[in-house]
View 1 (cartoon, rainbow, N blue to C red):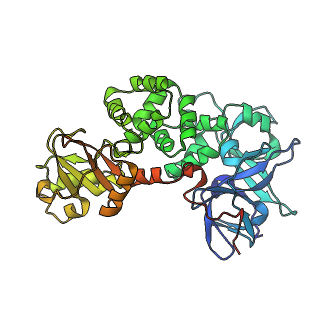
View 2: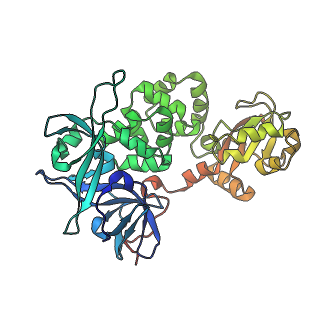
View 3: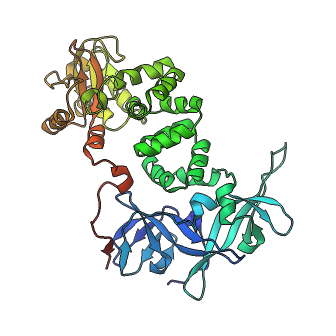
Length: 430
């Protein structure tokens, strides 16, 4: 193993992992340590590595040949491809140890763990030798500086036993800092792997918009579990921050009484589109659609249309076309005219009216169209997004290809990844 003096867990987070021949394996998401009953530093058992399929697997430290500032390299051999599951005596350094409250043995000062460092020993094992801690303060008075960071030997800190970590309340500041550079789908995978207590602490610390994004990427059972943990008022706020179609899918999984109560707590303008979506079966165009596509009147300019689809918050699939309708523009709209494709808009002068770029020949889906028909529609017309129009020619929403894929993939695909790399339990990287 390449000589490395000390590696902090936060430095490892997100590093790419490569096989012996340079093939990409995945990214480091956490460290797994086995806590001891004595005061000796705990042994680092291995890494939690996220594969390209979103599956998280355990890689023993003995398989690691080098840790560089920009990558981790594995030795020749096999990697167990089973989904990582934490054992009772194991602790996730980033997921559980950071933000934990502890005490300095020397003077009983209360501190918070900010990071942890591992070092190799002569047996080729790695141990967690150092902790970066910051003194806990009840509040910062005027002119008072934030407590300085200290890096101390593991033995200088107490209160980090397995019982302590599972019983004490923790903040989530350090973990949320790591999430800043991660996509919502990757955060969701991390949150799923956390113990229930820690998962709740992270959810409590997230702002509503971020938690809504993460909740949309979780499997249904995890969505319901987290939503039930939140107060009803905050749960309603989270549902308001979610895309209406995702909020409707989640509410559809709840008991009717819970569903009605949360809808009543939501703001009327936020709950109304969700109520409309709940009226459709989940496997129809109406149940798949979002009621918030880009809708413009025929007399809008091409420049206005491009400005709308340039919005960074607009999902990529919805940005592929503008829906042209007579007023009113909120769904259900006035009479549906047609769609203006993004590529066509790029070829038109900015001052030209959108009406001149409308495609009136593209058929529209009906709200009751079954999933099979919707799938054939997208395949036939090579679309990323398509209109849903009712019998009175009102645009009621738009279906995007990602929503179609969500319903075509096998149940539970979020837990197992996009696809199973192999049916074997081990894969040879040599």
